[in-house]
Image: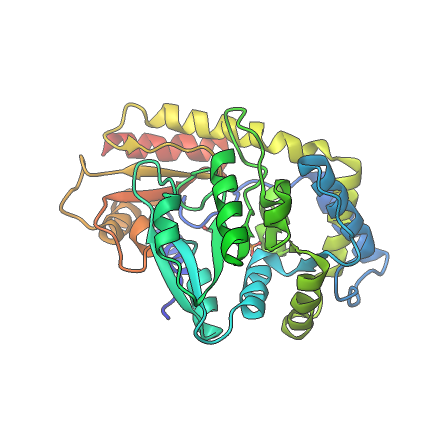
Amino acid sequence: MGTTIFSQMSQLAAEQQAINLSQGFPDFAADSQLLAALARHSSAGLNQYAPMPGVPLLLQQIAALTARCYGRVLDESREITVTSGATEALFVAIQMLVQPGDEVLLFDPAYDSYSPAIQLAGGVPVHLRLEAPDYRVDWQQVATRLTPRTKLIIVNSPHNPTGMVFSHADWLALQHLVAQHGLYCLSDEVYEHMVYDAAPRLSANCYAELAARSVIVSSFGKTFHVTGWKLGYAVAPAGLMTEFRKIHQYVTFSSFTPAQYAIAEMLREQPQQVTELAGFYQHKRDQFRQALSGSRFSLLPCQGTYFQLLDYSAIAPELDDLSFCRYLTIEHKVAAIPLSVFYQHGSNARIIRLCFAKQDTTLAQAAEVLCRL
Ligand code: PMP
Ligand code: GLN
């Protein structure tokens, strides 16, 4: 396993003093009430180990959020665990569900932490390719890739890096597949609150038969603009969650205590911040797309997440996407992520990913540069 592309590109961006639209994180401050709450809870002495499953106040708020957004009623003491980022939740879920030799279906382009976690568990990642420009899943094709060893399917909607969002029909097809073949599902929903154009907010939480066999993962880093806090959570039926916690207790045991209290307070006192997130990022998406409309890049659809894919084949078809990203960072001082790194066997597509979780001025500056290419 090599060094992740996110470390590579952020380091190159820093060396080159480039505008960093590569690794996905906001360049603006989190809400001042959240930051004040963190300081207050820490000053009040809440600095020792949290309970292993998470601070009860936060578990209650996660249950309330899940009920508000998806109508699912959770037993907060048995079906939710707070983790050190979604990354830990994904890792623990995979170690729990995958035994040596088990096959795991996942879709390329895939977020980069899934496959290494499967391999560490002794499992076999089975990559199915999604194709530009829409990156929709062909569920009939998925069914043909099942074998008696298939144990788990990993899905990610809204999808990093493509911005694709599952429709109701996608979720139903997934539920059918999982139920019919006795699979488990790991549903990575870290961008769940960033769905645009008034599309319905759907989740594995909305489908009871699917939820009964799923671990659902989310991240407060995305929702509250604090990726560095590394605070996320997993939701699963009590039986699965019991097994999940056996591993979580020996990976991190518990996560940063004052942040758990601070996020719980925000969810209780400012619940509208979660619902307003989609509008906030949709505005950025629209402004950024508008600013790039005069460029020679062609813009792929973006239904969710804070990522925009750009096809640069009209600009430098001779360069592969990693070379193009290095060229863009070094020569033009805008850093991006090549799409091919999210594929098991690479990709010849001339497509890069840009993060628009940035201040309007940052996006405008970057767009100005990109329009000159
Ligand atoms: N899954 C996806 C699809 C992501 O994009 C990310 C982070 N960017 C994560 C998981 C990890 O989230 P966290 O930072 O909370 O560990
Ligand atoms: N998920 C973030 C992205 O896609 C990066 C997270 C990381 O650096 N590990 O850019």
